[in-house]
Length: 312
Ligand code: 8YV
Image 1 (cartoon, rainbow, N blue to C red):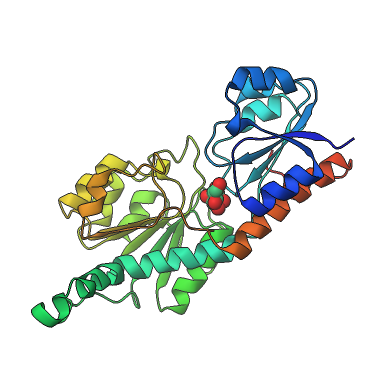
Image 2 (cartoon, rainbow, N blue to C red):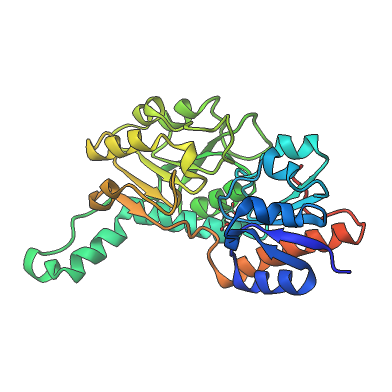
């Protein structure tokens, strides 16, 4: 008998196909009535394969009393209530490490595009302005500038290595200092004050909710740039929008937003914002690796073996 699982939403096609082949899989995202669906499978489902932002909390866990494991597609598990899982002895896994380099590439692209305004310069060219109005205005170099990394974890370190290779100086803030060759700042505002570009790479938790607020943006100042590659919830988005409109910071590069895929349209007309549609890990190779790890965690668990990447 194949173990029974629920897939929360339609995700990476290759991974979906393997999940539906290796397990008896039921797709919650397509269920016309959620409660009827959960009642139907309550007695038999032992695993949850989670994709995207759908909340996974104690209420859902209690609706599946046989649930043993929640295997997330993604390193960020902010949609899953880890405390509720712990209380119910439900294992939670994610997909770290396989996406570090890919997300770090995206972060470097956002830093370069935000500071050098490459997307804006391309729009300028495509609009026929180069011939009619002359060269695109000069921007500023990233070499020699200070990159402040808020959340120097595995992805943060990959970003720091890339930025250092581009001649940037690195500083960071974490909950506690770590053994790295970069100066440590005691809080986000101090890091912002000491940085030209502040990049956010923290998990989204209650502690990091709106950690980028007016105080931090004031410290970053009118010549400073913000880049967010973490989650929309770590930035006070309405405040950021206002600071960009009032040019109280020099610019921002965003890959994540509070209410994805809905992005406040006010951002669209800003000349000092670069907007990516959450493509941090969006390559064929990386998404396959993430799916393979999500599946491997389920396989190992149902084989009675320790999972590869446990979060809780
Ligand atoms: C995922 C991400 O693509 O890993 C994460 O936490 O944000 C992305 O890599 C996203 O979670 C898709 O579900």
